[in-house]
Image 1 (cartoon, one colour):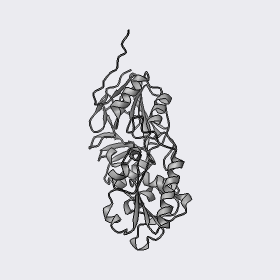
Image 2 (cartoon, one colour; image 1 turned 135 degrees about the vertical axis):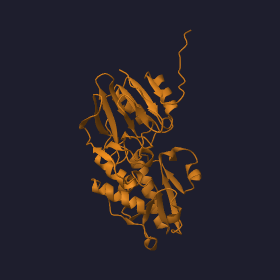
Image 3 (cartoon, helix red, strand yellow; image 1 turned 90 degrees about the horizontal axis):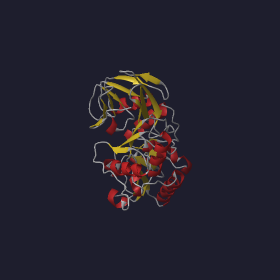
Image 4 (cartoon, rainbow, N blue to C red; image 1 turned 30 degrees about the vertical axis):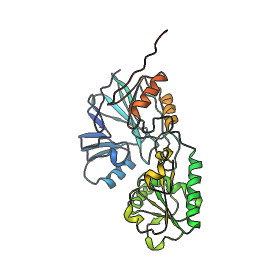
Length: 327
C-alpha cells in the first residue's frame, strides 16, 4: 500500500494523473468546493453538481465537468475508482475517496467541518488507508464554542445595534459563511440585506435546495432596521452606511485582539472549518494507517497525532520526529 503524493499549489497524484484542488490550470482536477483558493480554469473537472454551478458562477468558461452525486462511484484511469462524500464545509463541498487495487484507499478531505451546520451537507467519515486532511485550526486553543451559543451572541449584537439606531453589519465571506449566517439569523426576526455578490451566490444556493429566510439586495436608502451581510473589505458598501456597528464572523475570532486587528466592533467565532477537537475526532473515525496534514498548523497537528500514536506527516514541511529515550 503506497501513494506518491506531491504538493505545489494543490495535491498531485502522479500514479493516477489527477490533481486535487489545484490552484492553477491543469488537465484534470478534483475540485472539493468553489472557494476561490480551491479553483482554477482546469480542462477537466470532477465535483458535485452544486460545486459545478458555483464554480461556473465564479469562474465562467468552457470545461468538461463530471458532476458526481455523493456516494456514487466513478471509474478513473489506471484501475482507480472515486467516490465523493460530503465535507460539511459549504454547500456542495466534498471529500474524495480514491480506491486502487494495488495502492489501497486514499481519502482527501479538502476543507471540512465535522460539526453540523445549517448551510452544508453533514460531513461523512469513510474509512481509508491513507488520509490527506486539512488542518487550518490544528492547535489545541482552537476549540469552538457551541454554534447555538455563538449564534445567540450574533443575534444579541444585531438587536442591540438596531435598538440604538445603528445598522449591524456582519462581515462574512460571500460563499458559505454568508449563507450559514443568513439561515442562523432567522430567529431574530430582523430583515436582512445582502451585498450584490453575496446575493448572487445565495440565489444559486437556493436553487440547489437551501431554504433561506427572507432577504433583499443592499439598498442604502432603506437601511432602517436591517442587518447587512457583506464580505470583509467591502469598503465601498461600508462607506454608504453612516451609522454602523461591524462584526466579523470567523474562526480566527478565538485569537486575542481579533476585533482590534480586524478593525471592527465585535468578532464571533463561527467557522466552516473543523476545530482542533473535531480534527482529532475525524482521524479516530476514519482510522487510517497513514495521515498527511495540509494547510494551517499542519506541522504542529502532525506532531500531535504522532504523540497520540498515529503515523502522521505534514505535506511539504519539515517534520520534527519525537523519540522516547529509555532510562
